[in-house]
Image (cartoon, rainbow, N blue to C red; front, side):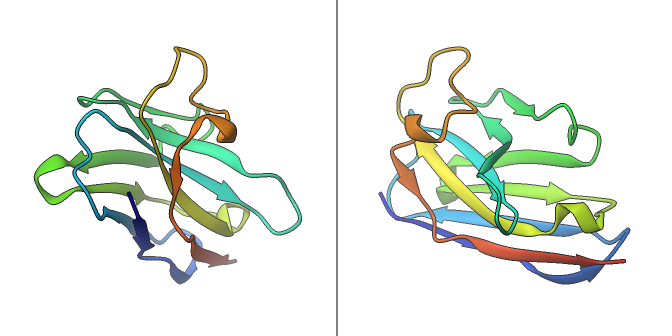
Length: 123
């Protein structure tokens, strides 16, 4: 499975962005997640949509970020509202076939990764 992330860009604080992740193959049975990696920092969990569709966002972002998926289009999305400068990072989508209940934050548990899309939020 190849993942293609897109939708990043340069925006101002308070703006919104919608990131897209399109897979080369069907996403049936895959959990889809978004991570982000600020410059010089480790990759961080942002949100996950489990198969067949339960969604969960990191506690710090759950009021602003919403993950969704369209299985018919082999795609997952991350809607980001009220963006802040501290949201600046490279955003990656990832897919995992098997995840235990508490593994969603662990980058090592994901089977496939997209190439990343850069989000820059100016103040």
